[in-house]
Image (cartoon, rainbow, N blue to C red):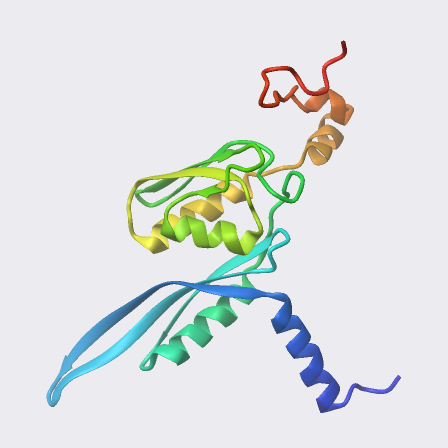
Length: 190
């Protein structure tokens, strides 16, 4: 079997990179005081996703901003998680997540709601490909804690098929009867 040439590997890497989009959530400048003055460094927090249910976050530090962003993006690509989405637009169920003093509450929403969430959480949902969600951040406003708490809440997400398989039941027995906008039950037998 022939090995791919360097040109083919480059194209493959480009295709993989183009598959994901990234968003800079936060950049922090830190100063180290040395004999000649101050030496600045930068820390970046980046969220990466494929807009189809895979998302990850990364943290990178360097002396220059672009290098810190590059390191954070690479770290985010290594830490991707898959999140099941309902109708490829919202979450299957409500969930809560914690990290340190940061706490977040995520709720699924009907079509047309949009992303109702603050800065750091909004970036995660946009990169995940969620179109309708209501989220609230409680406690810490530190973007690192908020992003980690959001990922903690997203890890709790399960699709009805996996829950039904675990409980040896049918999906129809697991899925609660959801209400549409008019107040009538969807999926209810008339």
